[in-house]
Image (cartoon, rainbow, N blue to C red; front, side, top):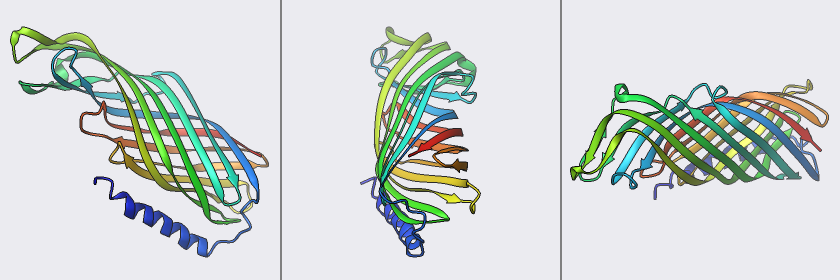
Amino acid sequence: MRQTWMRPVAAALVTMGVCAGAAAQEAGLRPGWSFEVAPYVWLPSVSANLRYDLRSQLAGSADVKADAGDYFGNLNFAGALAATVRYDRFSLLTDIIYVSADAGGSRVEGVDIIGVGRNPISSTLNVSGNSTLKTTLWTLAGGYTLASGTWGNVDVLAGFRYLGVEATTDYNLALTLVGPRGNAGPTFGGAGRFSGRDNIWNGIVGLRGRINVAETGFFMPYYVDIGGGDSNPTWQTFAGIGYQSGWAGVQLGWRYMSFDQGGSALVQDMSLSGAYLAVNFSF
């Protein structure tokens, strides 16, 4: 099975946490119920390789490279919210993001026509191209505090991550490709539009927590996970600097997320990387 690599990864994450827990102080563990809500802004650059199904035109597929480097400039709408519920050492966390953005640097890199073969398409033949990506990301995971103290905490987590993508690409090519029937059959080229949807589910395991900077109120949040299922693999990490005063806090950091699909999936691979700003409320 292609996901057997997850077993040693999960074991390593748990071992790291147990070793830290053996030397932990208990002063930083808050007893009973606690809640945290954190609306945030994440402005990543996006790079994606898409594979559209061409059954409505020719039997085959088309590969598109979509880059939204200036993500803020191409942003149509974005919303993000994270929340955590804790009871003693146990926790439940969720994180949901919806983003709609344009990738003006899109280009068709190749068309694979059944009965003809693959036709690479150079960038000079891409007159213009634009993709719109509507992306929903949802993570839900249970956690357990393995180590805590005045220095901070280490939690191990396990759950799932969902990626839903609705993609459209408008293209304009300075060429025309024919199918196995030649000019007597359907052709591909000129100006047109691709569209597709993909729903990607993955199980994940990881570590998260924060490191407190003495008694200053400053802290360094960290998070890392890895998983698989529809992806092979997916992984995410972020780190930053924050400040907490009573029930309110703020943090600024950098976040990276990656998906690798392959096969006939619409999303062949996708990466998102950029700065985030969060405001958290604890009670």
